[in-house]
Each structure stands twice: as C-alpha cells, then as structure tokens.
Image 1 (tube, rainbow, N blue to C red):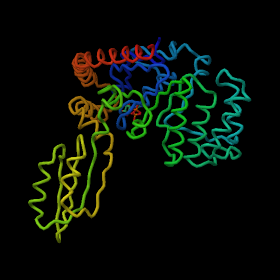
Image 2 (image 1 turned 60 degrees about the vertical axis):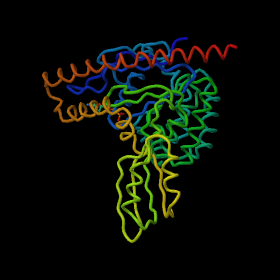
Image 3 (image 1 turned 180 degrees about the horizontal axis):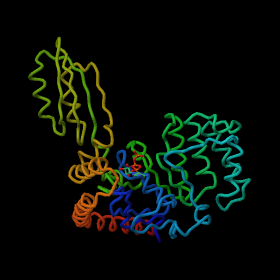
Image 4 (image 1 turned 120 degrees about the horizontal axis):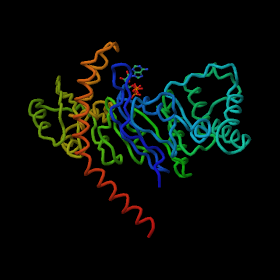
Length: 367
Ligand code: ATP
C-alpha cells in the first residue's frame, strides 16, 4: 500500500540558510506520526511543504499519492491542516467561519460536517457564537482544530496543535487524535513536547537542524528515558552521601549543595529510575521532583553527535546574513552531504529491522 506521506531527499533553502537537508520521511496510512525537534529544527517547513504553502528547493513530496503542487483543491479537501501560527482575525462568528469551511472541505455533505463541528466545539468548550477575532488564543486554536477535524479528512497535518490549550483540553485533543486513527485516518503532528507525542504517536522522527537524527517507534527512541531529578534529603554526612550518588547507575550531571544537615542534589538520569530511588531509601526524603527535560536536552544527550553538529550548523546558519555567501553556503552543503552519507549507512540496519518487524506484524494480522 502507498504511504500516505512520502518525503524523499527534501531540501529547502532560504537564501543561504538551509532549513531542510535531504529529509526523508514516510507516514503509513492509519497511523499517528510525530515529528519532534527543538525550535528551528524544520518541523514547520516540512509540514508547509506538504500543503504547498512553500515549495521545496529540491526533492520529492507526495501526499495521498499526489504531488501537493498539482493536487489543487481536490487534494486539499482530503486534508485537515492546522498551521503553526494560526491567525483568525475576521469579524465572522466561529459558527459562520466553520459553515464556510464545511462547504469547501471534505466529501461529506456540509450539514453533516457542520454537525460534527458543533459536537467538537462542545467537547473542546468553545463558544462559536462569538466573532473569532474576540476569542482568546487558546479558543482560536480550538476553532483551528475543529476546522481541521470536522470533515473527517483522510490526512490530518497538525503543526504544534496543542499550543495555547490548557491541560484538560490537551487531553481531549489527544483523544480526538486517537479516535481519528481508530477511524482509519492518518495523523502527522509536530510538537516540541515529548509527552504528547509519547501518548499518541505510533512512529516518530526526531528532527535537528533540518535533518532526521533518529526515527522509529516511540519506545525505541528512548527519548522518555531521560529524566531530570531533584531531591532534598536529611543527612549527617553530606560529603559521603554525595559520593554515594556518584555510584548510582545512569545518574550524571550531579549538582549538590548542603546546609544544616540538608543535602539538595540534582542530576539527570538516563535509563531506569529504580537505582536512584533505592539510593534514596536510607534517607529522610524531604522533597523529590522527577521531570522531563526539554526536548533539546534529550535529543542532544541521546543523539549527541548528529544533533550537536546539526546545532552548530544551525548557529552558523542563523549567524549568516542571508546575503550571498557562496563559500559558506557550499561548505555547509558539503558537510551536510558527508553526514547524510554516514547516516544513511548507519540507518540501513534500522530500516531493515523495521521492515522485518512490520512484515512480522502484518503476518500476525493475517493469521
Ligand atoms: P519551531 O519549533 O520554533 O516552530 P521549527 O522546527 O518549526 O521551529 P522551522 O520554522 O521550520 O522550524 O524553521 C527551520 C529553519 O528555517 C530555522 O533555522 C528558521 O530560522 C528557518 N526559516 C524558516 N522560515 C524561514 C524564512 N521564511 N526565511 C528564512 N529562514 C526561515
């Protein structure tokens, strides 16, 4: 079966800045695919290319079997899209705006689509009678989500869809994504919040400076295995206690201060948290925080070499003036090409393994 989204060797330049380097991504039908990466990684650029808001410098893109450049309105009707920066400034009410979208989107009749839109508005808690420009940022975002989902498109392309939403609404949104997948729709969403990708995505690609530095299923990427911990414990011998934590497997970057018999210690755990918890057991624990680090930190720790070189390329690129810098531009290109080759070799096995896994799973499905 053809993949719903096929991106091969996608390259995008803005002047001398390279936003996407020979990017490759395939999204299978009926799956949720998460695109994650720190700010400036190239998520928005990738997604905009899929809806023909911007055009590639080179490479190929196919969406639902068609080239977005030539798919026109017929292709767009099959897609639900939420842009990264949603501007809803019109005088129209939410209801009127959705009525218009219901006329032009999807293959269902407008009345059915609008009914779904109203149901979604109830679920997300947004008042459709108000002019959209008077809505808060979060409520505008809800209207954006409703227009993307209500015509039950074959493909949903959602750029940072939960930005501005409060936690309860985010949960409802994640449920909507799961329901879409259960109904056979395909969802491609970008985020720099790891937890929402972990909760929904079947497959993930990690982007850093326009390159895929890792891809696979969420568990295999181990992004969630990095946690930042902070603890406050009572101890009569701060130096010995501190030294004991040096031996805890997976704990690194330890920072410790002590005063009045209280040791405050923080660090990063890569892998199982159990050894750290066991190391705390002999002490009175006065406070304990375990949190997800920001995505940039996780990506750098896990995919250090490729992501760090990507990040330094990015700062070189950001420092560039955008004016003609032929030598600098071509040097970046040459380094990029070298890395693309190396990574392509490194990923041969992963892709082969994935193919095996899929064929085993498909085989099981048939049995
Ligand atoms: P964020 O999470 O901050 O939205 P992102 O992963 O979506 O980031 P993009 O917006 O795709 O990243 O940007 C990728 C790179 O392309 C960045 O270096 C950015 O500065 C650059 N870029 C994006 N749009 C333009 C533009 N119109 N002109 C010049 N450079 C651009």
